[in-house]
Length: 301
Image (cartoon, rainbow, N blue to C red; front, side, top):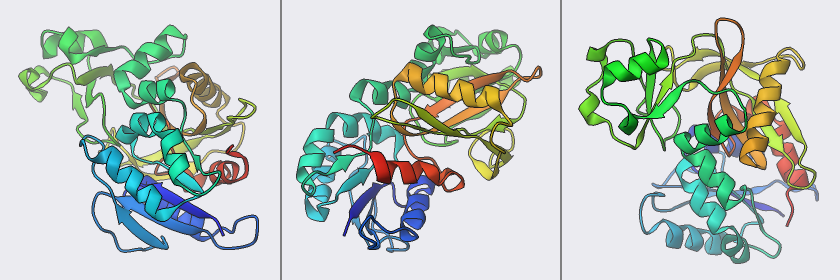
């Protein structure tokens, strides 16, 4: 039997993986044993059992994560919490060694994980590689809200550089919309791109480097104009080739491998721009089940 440990089990991405794994069987025809890990005790739900770890920002995170892996002895560790990815990437060999023989940790390298976990570093990297991104700046590089609006052409999105989903995101159209004194270098200013929003789901093989892309359309956003998708639908294959190509270019520029969740938006001319990149499974991965299939089939020991 195969045991899979999923972090962020109480969040949208982790809970989705728990449900997907509950419907699958391993190569031996056995149901997966799943361990859902989160900050607080959870009802098992779709998971076989659960465990707790400290938050990624706490000094206790690494010891608690290692203890959870030692206890569960998983064959596969799948992190789904954005701000833990740099630590998981750095600890990947140690975590794998604490699991069962030949255990695997589904994470990109430490450099790639760090670049994708910080939205400013993501923008720098993509812009340098020629991947289309909106106008942007660190909030600390701008003196006031008026400067942010001038940079972004009239509507700015201000968001934490390190965060999950739509937490802390503010759309700014007038100087009065935001107390600029509350921002600092930990905040990113980004131009608002007003067209349809997509969530490309990408799997880049760690073996061949080739990418599989499923483009999802966000049909309803939880915060209205920005944020996580309250509803999404799968776009027919080939219907948005520019979005798919941009997603692959972004993943390659960051050198991510494995599952990647992304936010892409079109401007008024129909040109796509990358807003954010998450080097992990996202909340919408059930719409693209082939990503999990490829992880279970291919991820190297």
